[in-house]
Image 1 (tube, rainbow, N blue to C red):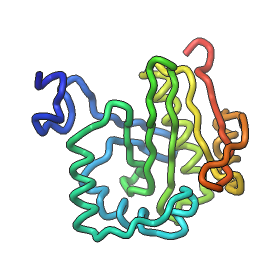
Image 2: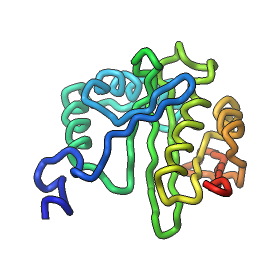
Image 3: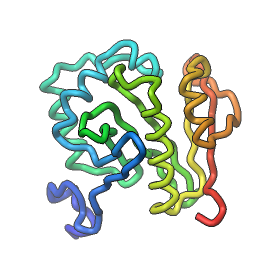
Length: 189
């Protein structure tokens, strides 16, 4: 039972899960760690970053967010994989995640955020997207990755297009306009 349901016993990860470390040209994508808490809280309370993520900034106190953050790490969701993005020198600059993982349909959604503004427009986002796609198509049985980016966020749209995503359709959610973009597994991978 412990092996099948590790979250019932407080394990952080099952013994079969390996630590993830993906090395790109400019970034390293790694598993989330408790050391990410401060940066994550700072980014999630930032109005501009929240707007780029089509969300409202969180308003909970740091201590409450910390409890939530630790609890989320203890109780892994098999439909979600969360990662941190570091520079090669080890500076935490952002996050990415694969979520709504659907093995029956062989697809999942991708989300990425470069939270440290000092690294905007310097290729770290593009390298992160390319690196996580290599990981997904090289280790997971998924054939399609999709995402929704804000219609007006041309920088993000260019980043995703340069990684091979195609714009599929416009989507409106709660009065906000998004562009759905998709990429499929390259042949031979």
